[in-house]
Length: 570
Image (cartoon, rainbow, N blue to C red):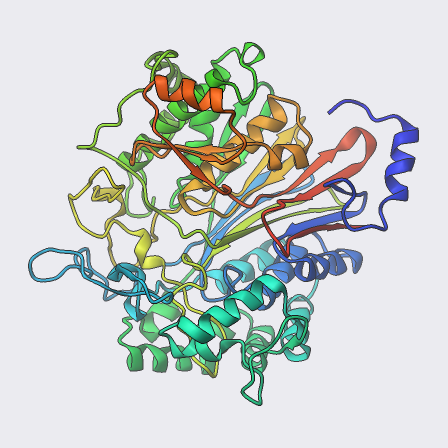
């Protein structure tokens, strides 16, 4: 980013009292960008009390479990990337695990066919995404607790208390949440969801009315008082097991007691002098992101106009190759000890892949090999920066929107349906995106492969861009394009987030693109190159922070596709 004159800085700070100025929020002391303004404010309040970025992240994550229940959670899992003020980066993996009773063929019938049923929307779905057997052992509470114990500064109870207060006192139900409330009230086959948005008198909470969650408040109180043990042991754990036994789930008390989060070394890449830090397996995000950035570094981007036919074609071919490698090689690193991570993220490997790209026509995805289908669309991401120079990028999920849709009434939270992120049928890969490769087959205590890509880009050893997104299998590509927009095309973070995005995942062999953002001439030219184009309304919902260290500015942005999202700073 170019140097900003002092007069402009003064003007910007006149705008700080408004939450979002011209698509951006400016601050000097701290910034939180999340999918819910209330949760972002909780994080900022923690920073104002002297907490660091980890403290604010823990508080924001718990607040999102109350205010953004379609994806914010204590019944799911995810990943955290942390960079401290010295430029040292680490990650915490709190991805869900398969229960001890899980097996590679647990979702197949006696003839080897994937069984089906009705999902929480009342539509037909494969059984690995529905019912209590689809629930993986949750990791969120363990991950947040590990982050706090290792890197937090304020008392744990002070970080959980704001979410308890929100759950007890209620918060105004938004328009988007109310739409879900009315849908579940009328259509959901799951009793828990039919009652989820109801008040104590049984009436459905209306737009703008306070939605209170006393059962969730009690669960959070146990976590506040007992830490990680407040979820994985004691009365909460006992109620989880009662739910599993009643509803045909396979998670046991031993599964809960054995669950641990893991601190892992980040995947690191470089692009034109910037350092890129992201998640290692069981997330595929970091490996694929670095591989694609390496490929794009070999292109002469100064001669490739943004959004041009050449640009979209090049992106699609780069994505095609990274996703094919993802399908073939990646899974839980604790179970796949020989994954070629150094090879996949090397500049030499990228050179070989880049040389295979025909700049005049589309490649053909080999339907006998690999494709992708991981992570539900209702993941959520938030980014945090503090006054001490620390940064956190955190993405977590329930898999589908509202996860399995199932929960114990006494506990007040939703369980994930993450078992659907494993390859459901060994050896079966087809052109629709079904995958049967070995690295991501179901095994007891294995973590399912993920697309989540929380990322921190560093400049001169300091955090420069903190970014991530929900979006299921599109996550890697939306983060990739946003990072590319900022550091290759010199876009400010808000423009980089809002700019046109595409998605290619190897199989199915199509380009998804945000409708109305590609010109008719460009679409026609791409089709002439043998690309198949599929329009979608939007890709991803990015939450980002850009740091202008020369002017001591934090610039936050929330994707316009997130109706309740906000970047809040001070």
